[in-house]
Figure 1 (tube, rainbow, N blue to C red):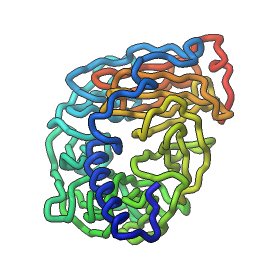
Figure 2 (cartoon, helix red, strand yellow):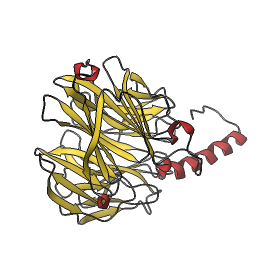
Figure 3 (tube, rainbow, N blue to C red):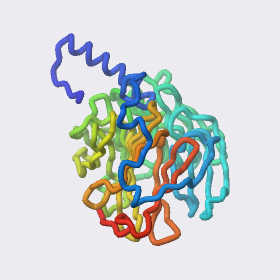
Length: 374
């Protein structure tokens, strides 16, 4: 953990050096040193447990899209977003619409803005881009002259009035920026190494707020003007994270992250709601998770740990006791998950990887089909 209270000059130099390494490393999608060999735990692709409970098959293939970084449901169609474009699939998995946009060096997500449909979230080595529904560039934001390069961006509505825009987190001392639909900066707030940003529903239902991590590994919540509503210290250093639903609520108002051999579900004030085992995880990973109702109203939780520089991913599926019912090591980079309705009573899990989306379904008669709820 990096939580110094008082340090000597020598320690300060070491901390600043570490911060510089983290800035470069995380900007490229990782906090680990470059060039480290693939650890034995994630070297070989395999199903560690649960092969008798879930089946896996290809759902959609398109190498032209690159890495599939977001999967959503829109108007009863499956929307799959990649680094170079997006596709809309009908119920029978046939293509309804295919969109291309300029290649992005970071994750691209579907957004619902008046002027934009896709957001290239940006990374230390690349700008953030907003694309319209036809894939045309609306604007780009690099952070030049703003005190740092882009670490991350998120789009949506903010505050009680629901104003639309994009929040950008910058590297170094660049802080947090709110960008209007025309690409202009509307306000700036200071902070250091804003690794990851999201727009999330406030607990008091007063509209969306900004949540982000920073160099201190803390969770910060800001209002529509960027003013700090809360500054929290989770039990783990918080860098990359994702929004998630948890338990009985479908709202994306919890935070999922990981540290060492565990996946953590955190509340909006940084408290640990659940700690899920993640055996075999080799290092700090990019984390995401989603609820899945495989059978009827029975919820499971799927957690994904992404090691992009090793081209490896770890998938875990948990039951109501937070126990692993399925565990897999994939020898590919996977960056997105979403639950979609199946032809039977329940959901299937889609996993987006490079050029491929996989579908996971419970095997008939397996323990998972009987299920337990969270």
